[in-house]
Every structure is written in structure tokens, then in C-alpha cells.
Image (cartoon, rainbow, N blue to C red; front, side, top):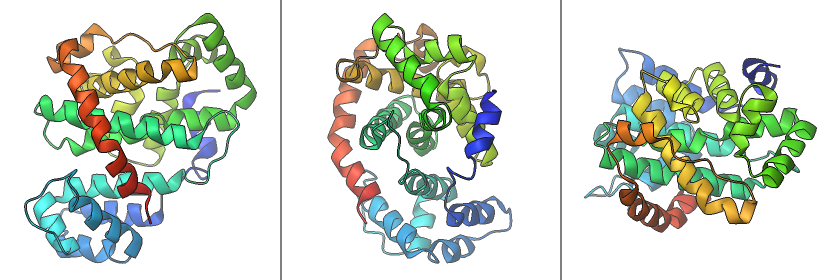
Length: 279
């Protein structure tokens, strides 16, 4: 089975809320105005309330309070609104998933920690629209949800082998299945017709040498993900892969610069979890 086939089998099981696609359609239309987008957003009180809560949080740090969706769009821009809507939608899409192979609380802690680090790295690298790296961090691991759901017996064995032989899980997936979770996740995002940069970043963050157009984005998620895996390794029993030296070349970062970013990201974790998951 190929990554594309796996993704296609869960496309309807793991689906983003319809409101996201309505928002995306309006944003993508060249003639759309701020009011056009705002009219769609406010049709969903949940998503509009969450957007306002997030943009008024210390995580964004705007100087004045933003009281309406049109004002939020004027200040943030369409791209950031899209990324926020996608982030909120993603947390809803995977809320009901149950698997004996994955604890969803741990899944979200991993994903949000990775996202927070990625956003800080993007800012440090002066990446324009760094919010998209936060979204990529949130979505980078969804391929594992697909694999665990569709190939539970195979992946249970892979997890056990990875722990026993201390082989990084993605490396073992590639060797045994012919693909890894990142490729599956990238295929699912493509089926959802998400922005190309997100699809490529998720698809190639485990093998950044295979990405050209969005190489810096892939390198940022690669670094952020491995930092989180390293921190989790004692709890999970899984060996974290080493950071590819190419990612340091692409981002111009050094290893010494990473520890402070982890500390800062961890400070933001409680606020991010509250913003995304509190009704």
C-alpha cells in the first residue's frame, strides 16, 4: 500500500470542518474583500470566538484589543487568518480519534510543542508569515494517526522493534513499509487541498534533502520535531533521530541557539493548549 492509498482511505474519517473550506475558498478568490471573509467566519460562532481569543492573547502580542473579525483580518492579514482557522479546524478534526497505539493527549502535547518551537525558529530566521510554521508543526505528525488507524498490527510491531533495537521510528517505517509517517501526512494534506507549502513541509520534514521549494520550512519542522522527540525519548522509549546538518545550513542556526527556544516554547505551552482546546 502506498502513502497516497493510505491517505485516501481515511480522507473522510479525518476531515476538516466544512467552515474551514468555506473560509479558504473565499480567501483564495482574488476579488474577495475583508468583509467577504469576515461574513463567512462569523457564521461559525465557535471558530470566530476562538480566533478573537487567540489574537488577543499574549501569544500574538498585539498592542490594542481586537474586538471584531473584520478588524482582526485587517490587522493580521488574510494569510494569518487562514492559518488560525486551519489550526482551530485541525484540533476539531482529530478530537474523536481513539487508538490503542496512541494517547491523543500526548499526541497534541507533542504537536503543539513542536509548533511552538517551529514558530520561534521561524521568527529567529526572519521567515515571513511565521504562523504557517506553527500550522505545519500542528499538522506534522498526522501521518501517524493514519498509520495507527489503518495498519494497527504492523505499527504495533514497528513500535516494539523501534524500542527494542533503538532505531528511530521514522527510519524503521521507511525500511519496513517503504514510506514513513511524514509522507502519509503530506498525502492527506494534499487530498484536503491545503496550501502547497504545508503539504511539502509535512511530507519532507523527515528527509529535508528531498525538498527544494520549501526547504527552509521543512528544515524548521525537522529541527523542532527532533527537539521534541529527544525530550520525549525517556518517556516513550523511542530513540530520537539526529538533526540533519543540512537543516543548520538552511536556517543558519547553531545547536547552542536551540536550548533557549525550547525554554521559551515551553513557557507558551499552557496558554496555547488553553486557547485551542477550551470551549
